[in-house]
Image (cartoon, rainbow, N blue to C red):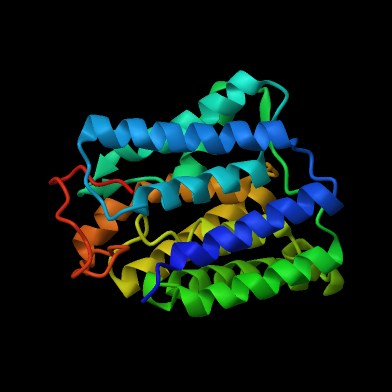
Length: 275
């Protein structure tokens, strides 16, 4: 089976090019180049320091997915903070680990860390527009087919739970259905659902655990947005719930995911593999 990250890379790169060229995304070519080159350089450096051995190009693919996600979501007026965000995103995979795998989704961990340490970065959902949203939705739906072995069950579970909470609140308040539908028509929500929470390397190992994890993230995101009235509920909730993954894996154990088929994968150094 082909590496599902290749499809992810194509989808994210196409969206970034389209957004920069036609939708006036608030990111320059130089800033995108800085983020992408920094994540690759950091991944290469960390691989060498940790003496991690992975299939050819494997770690670079993961780093590029993180870098493209940063290009689409993270905004700052300072180049040094953008570079720091890219470094934190990749280095976190090697420094914060539990149960033999990295704890946080790299992009989520990097963005949340930057939001915590400085008020000079923010998250931008981008100016998507209806045509771009539905085109990206189709591309994301296609990724479910490509990523069927990458445990896309967590994607289904999350979007069903989150949509149920959003619609349920609107029905309780007597709001017209157009309001919850509009709230779900978000490019940032698609990016989160199909490329962040669905990361098979940072979700629980068992299907039951992943469904529980998705439900917890959905409730946390809903609570932050509609009860605490804070922005970036999706990101805060995923970061908080990620700390529960080791416990979920202990309570409901399952098979650890590996990107490469076993016959093609090189033997990794124990407890150090992070790609």
